[in-house]
Amino acid sequence: MSEEKNLTTAQDNKPVKAAENKPAVQKKSFGASLAKIGRSIANWGRDLKGELRKIVWPGWKQTRNNSIVVVTVIAIFTVAAWLMDLNFENVILKRLLALLTGL
Image 1: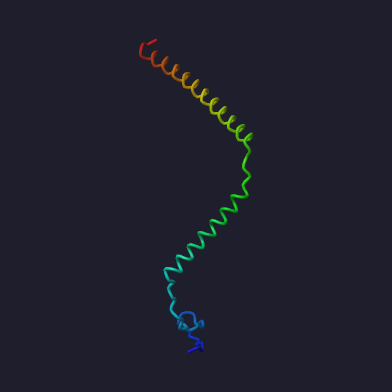
Image 2: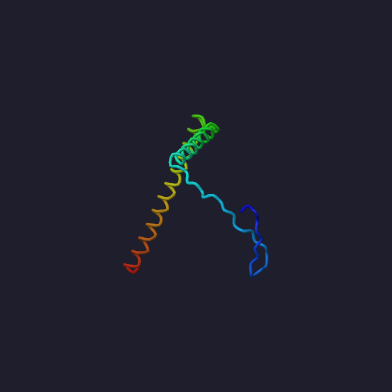
């Protein structure tokens, strides 16, 4: 049975190897699957710990300065949006009033 037989197909006349008898694929046990999952989770945790050690955390002074910049920019944009809202409100109300009164 271990001999290879050359078979030809009717369409292209190319030699084709005969199928060999292969043993059936054995299923893995549930315990082996759980162990594999456990190992992959443990590897992920080790990799995560290594990556966290590479982080350079900012100091207190840099964090404070960055927070001041963020709060200042938010305040400036809030005031700008409020002023534009007032301006648009006045323009719309004047035009609406002009249309209603006919001025």
